[in-house]
Image 1 (cartoon, one colour):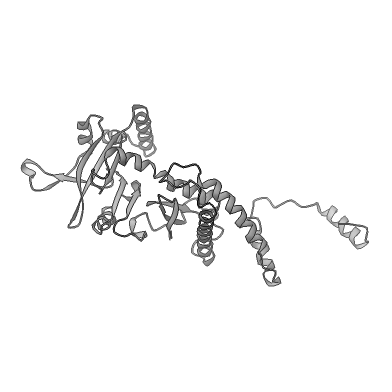
Image 2 (cartoon, one colour):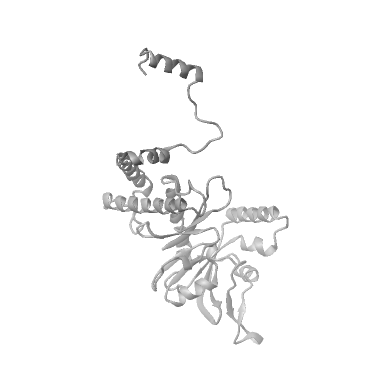
Length: 326
């Protein structure tokens, strides 16, 4: 599975209002689980229903030993973009430190690797638990390394400081931590697999572009906001089931050479589904006003145009005199 998060903003907000925690099946590219939380809940594995044998592909936001260690200890596995600034890894000490775990200085270690892809055995610790893992270090090509250094310098400048030598060194590498042994997942394969994590970004983009799931038309904490978000997610689930049923034989899964992306399939089915929903609006007069209100435009700075008042008065006069056909 691939796991990632996205944000939703209430009308007029610039900061996060709600978070969507999304897990997709990497083979079928289908939604496995989506959880809605407020902005107070950050990204971590505790939001998901995971079992022994599950392998999750996750980005830097999940560098959290307090959730990684229990999951791996229960029989799960992770493939994680490692962030040396937010999570420590350890190795067996030597000499005076023999018999103890020593924190790895990645700046020093990467310089010794000499721009060679490498797999380093490591320990991930939390509390009294320690988990055997492996850190795959892949150097970036020079052109991409230069771009990564430029971005690191810009981030430091935005914060009013100079980038550290360590930060510039780390920016030149892709570091992937995994609990899977190299006999199962070698360095080359780990690098290739992590790039496939982009598929969850495409799923989020579809949810936003085709279903407007990030356009919240209610304020935080209201019953309408909760209904709106979960209604959108239910809509996405129905849309996905219909797409899978209608295009069951389409070559869109990742376990075979692909000929189609889900984008056009979702768009085709979404158009049909929207038409069906609009055709089924209640005919009960009690709900007519609510239906119209739900279709109304959002409030704007400028009101929607209508005819000038003198023209409207003239039309009404003509109607009263039976001289108008409108």
